[in-house]
Amino acid sequence: ETGVTQSPTHLIKTRGQQVTLRCSSQSGHNTVSWYQQALGQGPQFIFQYYREEENGRGNFPPRFSGLQFPNYSSELNVNALELDDSALYLCASSLFTGDYYGYTFGSGTRLTVV
Amino acid sequence: DQQVKQNSPSLSVQEGRISILNCDYTNSMFDYFLWYKKYPAEGPTFLISISSIKDKNEDGRFTVFLNKSAKHLSLHIVPSQPGDSAVYFCAASAGGNTPLVFGKGTRLSVIA
Image (tube, rainbow over all chains, first blue to last red; front, side):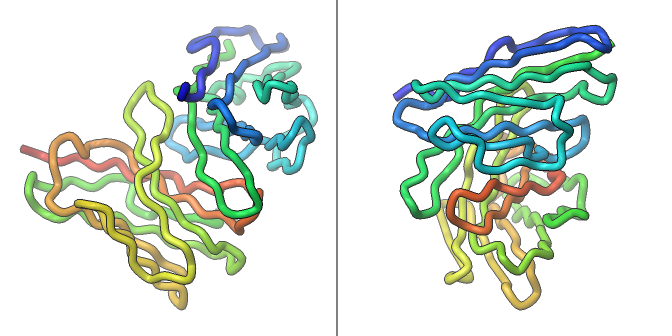
Protein backbone atom coordinates (compact mmCIF):
# COMPACT_ATOMS: atom_id res chain seq x y z
CA GLU A 1 0.00 0.00 0.00
CA THR A 2 1.66 3.23 -1.14
CA GLY A 3 1.13 6.44 0.81
CA VAL A 4 0.47 9.95 -0.46
CA THR A 5 3.30 11.47 -2.46
CA GLN A 6 3.67 15.13 -3.32
CA SER A 7 5.92 16.85 -5.80
CA PRO A 8 7.99 18.89 -5.81
CA THR A 9 9.15 18.98 -2.19
CA HIS A 10 10.42 22.55 -2.42
CA LEU A 11 9.76 25.35 -4.88
CA ILE A 12 10.75 29.00 -5.21
CA LYS A 13 8.63 31.25 -7.41
CA THR A 14 8.48 34.96 -8.15
CA ARG A 15 5.47 37.10 -7.28
CA GLY A 16 2.97 37.11 -10.15
CA GLN A 17 4.00 33.71 -11.49
CA GLN A 18 1.86 30.59 -11.62
CA VAL A 19 2.59 27.26 -9.91
CA THR A 20 1.28 23.69 -10.13
CA LEU A 21 1.68 21.27 -7.26
CA ARG A 22 1.03 17.57 -7.66
CA CYS A 23 -0.28 14.82 -5.43
CA SER A 24 -0.59 11.07 -5.88
CA SER A 25 -3.28 9.67 -3.63
CA GLN A 26 -2.96 6.54 -1.55
CA SER A 27 -4.07 3.50 -3.52
CA GLY A 28 -7.83 2.92 -3.24
CA HIS A 29 -8.65 6.42 -1.99
CA ASN A 30 -11.33 8.43 -3.83
CA THR A 31 -11.13 11.81 -2.09
CA VAL A 32 -8.30 14.33 -2.05
CA SER A 33 -8.08 17.48 0.02
CA TRP A 34 -5.57 20.32 -0.13
CA TYR A 35 -4.46 22.37 2.83
CA GLN A 36 -2.21 25.41 3.23
CA GLN A 37 -0.09 25.61 6.36
CA ALA A 38 1.50 28.99 6.95
CA LEU A 39 4.31 29.33 9.48
CA GLY A 40 3.04 28.93 13.04
CA GLN A 41 -0.49 28.08 11.90
CA GLY A 42 -2.53 24.95 11.56
CA PRO A 43 -3.45 23.55 8.14
CA GLN A 44 -6.15 25.65 6.44
CA PHE A 45 -8.59 23.88 4.13
CA ILE A 46 -8.34 25.00 0.48
CA PHE A 47 -10.64 22.57 -1.35
CA GLN A 48 -11.61 18.94 -1.66
CA TYR A 49 -12.30 16.69 -4.64
CA TYR A 50 -14.43 13.57 -4.57
CA ARG A 51 -14.55 11.41 -7.70
CA GLU A 52 -13.13 14.24 -9.83
CA GLU A 53 -15.69 16.84 -8.67
CA GLU A 54 -14.96 19.70 -6.27
CA ASN A 55 -17.21 19.11 -3.26
CA GLY A 56 -16.01 21.71 -0.80
CA ARG A 57 -13.97 24.87 -0.76
CA GLY A 58 -12.44 26.94 2.01
CA ASN A 59 -11.92 30.69 2.15
CA PHE A 60 -9.41 30.95 -0.69
CA PRO A 61 -9.69 33.16 -3.80
CA PRO A 62 -10.46 31.75 -7.27
CA ARG A 63 -6.79 31.97 -8.28
CA PHE A 64 -6.45 28.76 -6.25
CA SER A 65 -7.83 25.98 -8.44
CA GLY A 66 -7.52 22.25 -8.67
CA LEU A 67 -8.14 19.07 -10.54
CA GLN A 68 -8.60 15.44 -9.66
CA PHE A 69 -7.83 12.88 -12.34
CA PRO A 70 -9.48 9.49 -13.01
CA ASN A 71 -6.66 7.75 -11.18
CA TYR A 72 -7.48 10.04 -8.21
CA SER A 73 -4.20 11.93 -8.39
CA SER A 74 -4.59 15.68 -8.08
CA GLU A 75 -3.13 19.07 -8.90
CA LEU A 76 -3.29 22.39 -7.09
CA ASN A 77 -2.78 25.44 -9.30
CA VAL A 78 -2.13 28.91 -7.97
CA ASN A 79 -2.15 31.89 -10.35
CA ALA A 80 -0.76 35.39 -9.80
CA LEU A 81 1.34 34.32 -6.83
CA GLU A 82 1.54 36.68 -3.87
CA LEU A 83 4.15 36.80 -1.11
CA ASP A 84 1.54 35.55 1.40
CA ASP A 85 1.14 32.36 -0.62
CA SER A 86 4.47 31.21 0.83
CA ALA A 87 3.55 28.18 2.90
CA LEU A 88 3.62 24.40 3.17
CA TYR A 89 0.94 22.89 0.93
CA LEU A 90 -0.38 19.57 2.15
CA CYS A 91 -2.36 17.03 0.20
CA ALA A 92 -4.43 14.41 1.98
CA SER A 93 -6.29 11.48 0.50
CA SER A 94 -9.07 9.43 2.00
CA LEU A 95 -11.68 6.83 1.15
CA PHE A 96 -15.22 8.04 1.61
CA THR A 97 -17.71 5.18 1.91
CA GLY A 98 -20.63 7.02 3.48
CA ASP A 99 -19.22 6.91 6.97
CA TYR A 100 -16.37 8.82 8.57
CA TYR A 101 -13.00 8.22 7.00
CA GLY A 102 -9.42 9.00 7.89
CA TYR A 103 -7.01 11.23 6.05
CA THR A 104 -3.52 10.22 4.97
CA PHE A 105 -1.27 13.22 4.44
CA GLY A 106 1.68 13.66 2.15
CA SER A 107 4.88 15.34 3.33
CA GLY A 108 3.94 18.57 1.61
CA THR A 109 5.40 21.03 -0.86
CA ARG A 110 7.19 24.03 0.63
CA LEU A 111 6.44 27.01 -1.63
CA THR A 112 8.43 30.22 -1.26
CA VAL A 113 7.29 33.29 -3.19
CA VAL A 114 9.88 36.03 -3.55
CA ASP B 1 -13.36 32.84 13.20
CA GLN B 2 -11.41 29.93 14.59
CA GLN B 3 -13.64 26.92 15.09
CA VAL B 4 -10.91 24.76 16.65
CA LYS B 5 -8.62 26.36 19.19
CA GLN B 6 -5.44 25.14 20.80
CA ASN B 7 -4.59 27.88 23.23
CA SER B 8 -1.20 26.58 24.32
CA PRO B 9 1.40 27.08 21.58
CA SER B 10 3.94 25.01 23.49
CA LEU B 11 4.28 22.55 26.35
CA SER B 12 7.36 21.15 28.02
CA VAL B 13 7.20 17.91 30.04
CA GLN B 14 9.76 15.67 31.69
CA GLU B 15 10.24 12.17 30.36
CA GLY B 16 8.01 9.67 32.14
CA ARG B 17 5.46 12.26 33.25
CA ILE B 18 2.02 12.91 31.78
CA SER B 19 1.53 15.30 28.85
CA ILE B 20 -1.91 16.91 28.56
CA LEU B 21 -2.77 18.79 25.39
CA ASN B 22 -6.02 20.71 25.23
CA CYS B 23 -8.38 21.71 22.45
CA ASP B 24 -11.63 23.69 22.37
CA TYR B 25 -14.16 23.95 19.57
CA THR B 26 -17.10 26.19 18.82
CA ASN B 27 -19.05 24.42 16.08
CA SER B 28 -21.83 22.22 17.51
CA MET B 29 -22.00 20.30 14.24
CA PHE B 30 -18.61 18.70 14.84
CA ASP B 31 -19.09 15.04 15.69
CA TYR B 32 -15.69 13.50 15.10
CA PHE B 33 -12.40 14.63 16.55
CA LEU B 34 -8.85 13.63 15.77
CA TRP B 35 -5.33 14.29 16.93
CA TYR B 36 -2.46 14.45 14.49
CA LYS B 37 1.25 14.54 15.21
CA LYS B 38 3.68 16.36 12.97
CA TYR B 39 7.46 16.19 12.80
CA PRO B 40 9.43 18.80 10.82
CA ALA B 41 9.59 18.12 7.07
CA GLU B 42 6.82 15.50 7.32
CA GLY B 43 3.08 15.61 6.84
CA PRO B 44 0.74 15.19 9.83
CA THR B 45 0.24 11.58 10.90
CA PHE B 46 -2.94 10.33 12.52
CA LEU B 47 -2.66 9.55 16.21
CA ILE B 48 -6.06 8.91 17.73
CA SER B 49 -9.69 9.87 17.21
CA ILE B 50 -12.97 9.99 19.08
CA SER B 51 -16.58 10.07 17.99
CA SER B 52 -19.06 12.36 19.73
CA ILE B 53 -20.97 9.34 21.05
CA LYS B 54 -18.02 8.52 23.30
CA ASP B 55 -16.27 10.47 26.03
CA LYS B 56 -13.00 8.55 26.07
CA ASN B 57 -10.85 6.59 23.67
CA GLU B 58 -7.62 4.89 24.57
CA ASP B 59 -4.79 3.54 22.44
CA GLY B 60 -1.69 2.46 24.30
CA ARG B 61 -0.06 5.48 25.91
CA PHE B 62 -2.54 7.86 24.27
CA THR B 63 -6.00 8.70 25.60
CA VAL B 64 -8.40 11.29 24.24
CA PHE B 65 -11.18 12.68 26.43
CA LEU B 66 -14.21 14.52 25.04
CA ASN B 67 -16.47 16.84 27.05
CA LYS B 68 -19.28 17.74 24.66
CA SER B 69 -21.06 20.12 27.01
CA ALA B 70 -17.87 22.16 27.41
CA LYS B 71 -16.87 21.65 23.75
CA HIS B 72 -13.48 20.56 24.97
CA LEU B 73 -11.18 17.67 24.29
CA SER B 74 -7.81 16.70 25.61
CA LEU B 75 -5.04 14.30 24.68
CA HIS B 76 -3.16 12.55 27.48
CA ILE B 77 0.17 10.89 26.84
CA VAL B 78 1.41 8.63 29.64
CA PRO B 79 4.29 8.12 30.08
CA SER B 80 5.78 10.80 27.86
CA GLN B 81 8.86 9.85 25.85
CA PRO B 82 11.45 12.03 24.05
CA GLY B 83 10.20 10.63 20.71
CA ASP B 84 6.83 12.23 21.45
CA SER B 85 8.38 15.66 20.90
CA ALA B 86 6.48 17.08 17.93
CA VAL B 87 3.68 19.48 17.05
CA TYR B 88 0.23 18.11 17.89
CA PHE B 89 -2.82 19.25 15.97
CA CYS B 90 -6.39 18.86 17.07
CA ALA B 91 -8.87 18.49 14.18
CA ALA B 92 -12.64 18.20 13.94
CA SER B 93 -15.18 17.16 11.35
CA ALA B 94 -18.95 17.52 10.94
CA GLY B 95 -19.04 14.02 9.50
CA GLY B 96 -19.75 12.65 6.06
CA ASN B 97 -17.35 13.96 3.46
CA THR B 98 -16.85 17.34 5.14
CA PRO B 99 -13.27 18.57 5.50
CA LEU B 100 -11.23 18.49 8.66
CA VAL B 101 -10.82 21.78 10.53
CA PHE B 102 -7.52 22.09 12.36
CA GLY B 103 -6.29 24.03 15.35
CA LYS B 104 -3.00 25.93 15.28
CA GLY B 105 -1.11 23.18 17.04
CA THR B 106 0.80 22.72 20.29
CA ARG B 107 4.53 22.05 20.24
CA LEU B 108 5.33 19.36 22.81
CA SER B 109 8.88 19.01 24.08
CA VAL B 110 9.64 15.97 26.22
CA ILE B 111 12.85 16.48 28.14
CA ALA B 112 14.99 13.49 29.09
